[in-house]
Image (cartoon, rainbow over all chains, first blue to last red; front, side, top):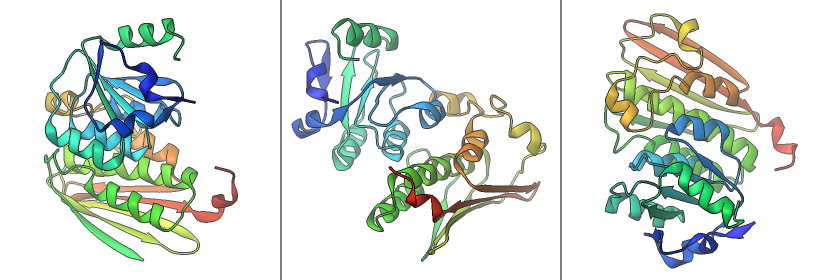
Length: 111
Length: 142
């Protein structure tokens, strides 16, 4: 497993406390259907989604995911950030689209 | 131990509150992750279903040495065809639900996949989803 901090470049902004960057991950799961994440995301996977909502955090929390990457620069509320900090989930925002995150992480050998 | 939670219809800000508390409770009791994850996944789906589809309801959570029970009750309008609703992909959710990442027709199938026993009863006055998880599986490796 790798620390989330390995992912960060100028294309990714971490919105949560620095300590969340030490969360460990293995692989990722991209979806805009939260039930699909509940069904199929592997343990320790990063959730990549454009659904920027408290429910996204709730879903990640339910299945203990270490990080969420919100794509397409969707607006992230303070409430989401606070909830992630409270639950120790790393919340990252990027201008990339879902598939571009996957391509980027794959090309850098991170997934 | 028995707990009860109110679930408010269409309130996405509070959706998941019951399931979060159930997760915290299971963690504090040292329940293995495999079982906790199954309970949380089913609980979250059931809770979201009440938020999305009903006029409101409540959930009860019970744990003893043998099993974990989750019951979700709402006050309607009910599921006209339970068999159809159990099919993955069938949904009557709104655009708002979709925008919030739900309504893909995976709620009941996800619950069924996670539980050891499941019973759904519904009429126009309400729906009752009964979910059972046996604690025997705690001996499995996490």
